[in-house]
Image (cartoon, rainbow, N blue to C red; front, side, top):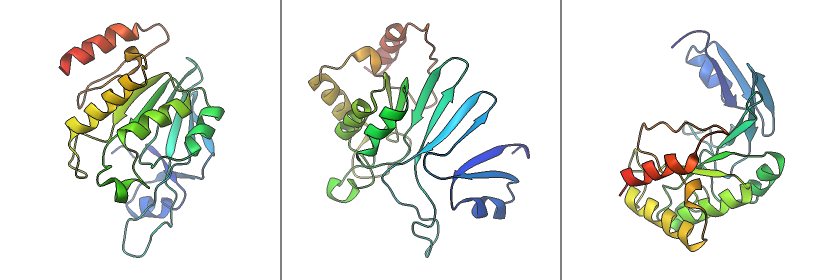
Length: 200
Protein backbone atom coordinates (compact mmCIF):
# COMPACT_ATOMS: atom_id res chain seq x y z
CA UNK A 1 0.00 0.00 0.00
CA UNK A 2 1.23 3.50 -0.87
CA UNK A 3 2.65 5.28 2.18
CA UNK A 4 0.84 8.47 1.12
CA UNK A 5 -2.64 6.95 1.55
CA UNK A 6 -4.73 8.85 4.10
CA UNK A 7 -7.05 6.75 6.27
CA UNK A 8 -10.19 8.34 7.71
CA UNK A 9 -11.30 6.25 10.68
CA UNK A 10 -13.79 6.47 13.56
CA UNK A 11 -12.45 7.88 16.80
CA UNK A 12 -10.74 5.19 18.84
CA UNK A 13 -9.14 3.35 15.91
CA UNK A 14 -6.11 5.51 15.13
CA UNK A 15 -3.93 3.64 17.62
CA UNK A 16 -4.73 0.33 15.93
CA UNK A 17 -3.82 1.72 12.50
CA UNK A 18 -0.55 3.28 13.63
CA UNK A 19 0.38 0.03 15.37
CA UNK A 20 -0.07 -1.63 11.98
CA UNK A 21 2.44 0.90 10.55
CA UNK A 22 -0.06 3.05 8.64
CA UNK A 23 1.41 6.55 8.67
CA UNK A 24 -1.43 8.90 7.75
CA UNK A 25 -4.50 8.33 9.90
CA UNK A 26 -7.18 10.81 10.98
CA UNK A 27 -9.92 10.09 13.53
CA UNK A 28 -13.46 11.46 13.35
CA UNK A 29 -16.40 11.72 15.71
CA UNK A 30 -19.98 11.65 14.46
CA UNK A 31 -20.84 14.70 12.34
CA UNK A 32 -17.19 15.69 11.88
CA UNK A 33 -15.98 16.34 8.33
CA UNK A 34 -12.95 16.93 6.16
CA UNK A 35 -12.39 18.05 2.56
CA UNK A 36 -9.89 16.31 0.26
CA UNK A 37 -9.51 17.59 -3.31
CA UNK A 38 -12.99 19.16 -3.37
CA UNK A 39 -14.60 15.99 -2.01
CA UNK A 40 -16.14 16.23 1.47
CA UNK A 41 -16.22 13.26 3.84
CA UNK A 42 -18.72 13.43 6.73
CA UNK A 43 -18.71 10.73 9.42
CA UNK A 44 -22.32 10.05 10.44
CA UNK A 45 -23.97 7.92 13.16
CA UNK A 46 -25.26 4.37 12.84
CA UNK A 47 -26.77 1.89 15.30
CA UNK A 48 -24.22 -0.83 15.94
CA UNK A 49 -21.25 -1.65 18.20
CA UNK A 50 -17.50 -2.16 17.83
CA UNK A 51 -15.10 -4.84 18.94
CA UNK A 52 -11.66 -5.88 17.68
CA UNK A 53 -10.29 -7.77 20.65
CA UNK A 54 -11.55 -9.44 23.83
CA UNK A 55 -11.60 -6.38 26.09
CA UNK A 56 -12.20 -3.42 23.76
CA UNK A 57 -16.00 -3.51 23.39
CA UNK A 58 -17.29 -0.13 22.16
CA UNK A 59 -13.99 1.67 22.72
CA UNK A 60 -14.23 3.19 19.24
CA UNK A 61 -17.06 4.72 17.23
CA UNK A 62 -19.04 2.97 14.49
CA UNK A 63 -20.86 4.76 11.70
CA UNK A 64 -21.30 5.54 8.02
CA UNK A 65 -19.99 8.13 5.61
CA UNK A 66 -21.47 10.86 3.46
CA UNK A 67 -19.23 11.54 0.45
CA UNK A 68 -20.04 14.83 -1.22
CA UNK A 69 -18.46 16.00 -4.49
CA UNK A 70 -18.53 19.78 -4.33
CA UNK A 71 -17.75 20.14 -8.05
CA UNK A 72 -20.54 17.95 -9.41
CA UNK A 73 -22.89 18.51 -6.44
CA UNK A 74 -23.43 14.74 -6.13
CA UNK A 75 -23.66 12.97 -2.79
CA UNK A 76 -23.28 9.31 -1.80
CA UNK A 77 -24.28 7.81 1.54
CA UNK A 78 -22.41 4.66 2.62
CA UNK A 79 -24.37 3.28 5.55
CA UNK A 80 -21.98 0.60 6.75
CA UNK A 81 -23.49 -1.77 9.33
CA UNK A 82 -26.56 -0.48 11.16
CA UNK A 83 -29.82 -1.44 12.73
CA UNK A 84 -32.84 0.70 11.95
CA UNK A 85 -32.89 3.92 13.99
CA UNK A 86 -34.20 7.48 13.88
CA UNK A 87 -30.76 8.74 12.88
CA UNK A 88 -31.56 7.96 9.25
CA UNK A 89 -34.09 10.79 9.28
CA UNK A 90 -31.57 13.21 10.76
CA UNK A 91 -28.97 12.28 8.15
CA UNK A 92 -31.57 12.86 5.45
CA UNK A 93 -32.40 16.26 6.90
CA UNK A 94 -28.75 17.32 6.90
CA UNK A 95 -27.73 16.06 3.45
CA UNK A 96 -29.29 15.88 -0.01
CA UNK A 97 -28.42 12.30 -0.97
CA UNK A 98 -28.28 11.07 -4.57
CA UNK A 99 -27.24 7.46 -3.91
CA UNK A 100 -27.75 5.44 -0.72
CA UNK A 101 -25.62 2.30 -0.34
CA UNK A 102 -27.74 0.33 2.11
CA UNK A 103 -27.05 -3.05 3.77
CA UNK A 104 -29.76 -5.68 3.30
CA UNK A 105 -28.07 -8.82 4.69
CA UNK A 106 -27.04 -10.48 7.96
CA UNK A 107 -30.49 -9.99 9.49
CA UNK A 108 -31.45 -13.58 10.42
CA UNK A 109 -32.34 -14.55 13.07
CA UNK A 110 -34.04 -11.16 13.34
CA UNK A 111 -34.67 -11.40 17.09
CA UNK A 112 -30.90 -11.39 17.56
CA UNK A 113 -29.63 -9.35 14.59
CA UNK A 114 -32.27 -6.61 14.52
CA UNK A 115 -30.43 -4.18 16.80
CA UNK A 116 -27.36 -3.97 14.57
CA UNK A 117 -28.48 -5.09 11.08
CA UNK A 118 -31.47 -3.82 9.11
CA UNK A 119 -33.70 -6.27 7.28
CA UNK A 120 -34.41 -5.61 3.57
CA UNK A 121 -37.72 -4.01 4.53
CA UNK A 122 -36.07 -1.78 7.13
CA UNK A 123 -33.42 -0.83 4.57
CA UNK A 124 -36.16 0.43 2.26
CA UNK A 125 -37.71 2.41 5.11
CA UNK A 126 -34.30 3.87 5.94
CA UNK A 127 -33.88 4.84 2.27
CA UNK A 128 -37.20 6.69 2.47
CA UNK A 129 -36.17 8.34 5.75
CA UNK A 130 -32.97 9.51 4.06
CA UNK A 131 -35.01 10.94 1.17
CA UNK A 132 -32.33 9.58 -1.17
CA UNK A 133 -32.87 9.29 -4.91
CA UNK A 134 -31.19 5.98 -5.77
CA UNK A 135 -30.82 2.77 -3.75
CA UNK A 136 -27.93 0.31 -4.17
CA UNK A 137 -28.11 -2.75 -1.87
CA UNK A 138 -24.91 -4.12 -0.31
CA UNK A 139 -23.73 -6.40 2.53
CA UNK A 140 -25.58 -9.50 1.37
CA UNK A 141 -23.80 -11.55 -1.31
CA UNK A 142 -20.05 -11.88 -0.83
CA UNK A 143 -19.99 -13.95 2.38
CA UNK A 144 -22.40 -16.12 4.35
CA UNK A 145 -22.86 -13.74 7.27
CA UNK A 146 -26.07 -15.05 8.83
CA UNK A 147 -28.94 -17.52 8.34
CA UNK A 148 -30.57 -15.93 5.30
CA UNK A 149 -29.44 -16.39 1.68
CA UNK A 150 -28.49 -13.65 -0.80
CA UNK A 151 -31.45 -14.62 -2.99
CA UNK A 152 -33.83 -14.26 -0.06
CA UNK A 153 -32.46 -10.82 0.78
CA UNK A 154 -32.87 -9.57 -2.80
CA UNK A 155 -36.34 -11.15 -3.11
CA UNK A 156 -37.54 -9.49 0.08
CA UNK A 157 -36.05 -6.18 -1.05
CA UNK A 158 -37.79 -6.33 -4.43
CA UNK A 159 -41.08 -7.46 -2.90
CA UNK A 160 -41.08 -4.55 -0.46
CA UNK A 161 -40.07 -2.13 -3.21
CA UNK A 162 -43.01 -3.36 -5.27
CA UNK A 163 -45.39 -3.24 -2.29
CA UNK A 164 -44.52 0.41 -1.70
CA UNK A 165 -44.86 1.13 -5.45
CA UNK A 166 -41.44 2.78 -5.61
CA UNK A 167 -39.84 3.62 -8.99
CA UNK A 168 -37.87 0.65 -10.29
CA UNK A 169 -35.45 2.94 -12.11
CA UNK A 170 -34.20 4.08 -8.69
CA UNK A 171 -33.26 0.58 -7.48
CA UNK A 172 -29.91 -0.74 -8.75
CA UNK A 173 -28.99 -4.34 -7.93
CA UNK A 174 -25.36 -4.93 -8.93
CA UNK A 175 -23.26 -8.03 -9.40
CA UNK A 176 -20.16 -8.41 -7.23
CA UNK A 177 -17.52 -6.19 -8.79
CA UNK A 178 -19.92 -4.45 -11.15
CA UNK A 179 -19.45 -0.71 -11.70
CA UNK A 180 -22.34 1.75 -11.58
CA UNK A 181 -21.59 5.10 -13.20
CA UNK A 182 -23.79 7.94 -12.04
CA UNK A 183 -24.03 11.57 -13.03
CA UNK A 184 -26.81 14.10 -13.25
CA UNK A 185 -26.84 13.52 -17.01
CA UNK A 186 -27.04 9.71 -16.75
CA UNK A 187 -30.06 7.90 -18.17
CA UNK A 188 -30.52 5.85 -15.01
CA UNK A 189 -33.51 3.90 -16.29
CA UNK A 190 -31.52 2.55 -19.22
CA UNK A 191 -28.68 1.45 -16.94
CA UNK A 192 -31.12 -0.07 -14.45
CA UNK A 193 -32.95 -2.10 -17.12
CA UNK A 194 -29.62 -3.56 -18.22
CA UNK A 195 -28.78 -4.53 -14.64
CA UNK A 196 -32.23 -5.97 -13.95
CA UNK A 197 -32.02 -8.10 -17.10
CA UNK A 198 -28.73 -9.56 -15.86
CA UNK A 199 -30.45 -10.65 -12.65
CA UNK A 200 -33.38 -12.52 -14.24
